[in-house]
Amino acid sequence: WGYDSDNGPERWHENYPMAKGDKQSPIEINSKDVHHDTSLPPWHTSYDPGAAKTILNNGRTCRVVFDDSFDRS
View 1 (cartoon, helix red, strand yellow):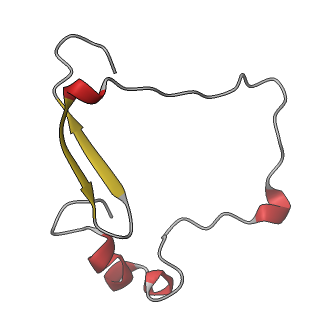
View 2 (cartoon, rainbow, N blue to C red; view 1 turned 90 degrees about the horizontal axis):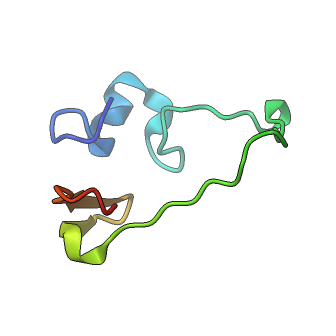
């Protein structure tokens, strides 16, 4: 699976039947087995909006394509 037209979210259910309908992800995360690792630092992200070439929100995911030739994002 991926995010291209030939393997994107609209086709995930072909290989992962549970991805159809309300279960959109082929990744099963069992919350009972998830544990917080206090040794991990907080995760932060940022980007330079001026480097964003395109921003697409298709209702399921948001995709941003950057021209980050100056390593600002």
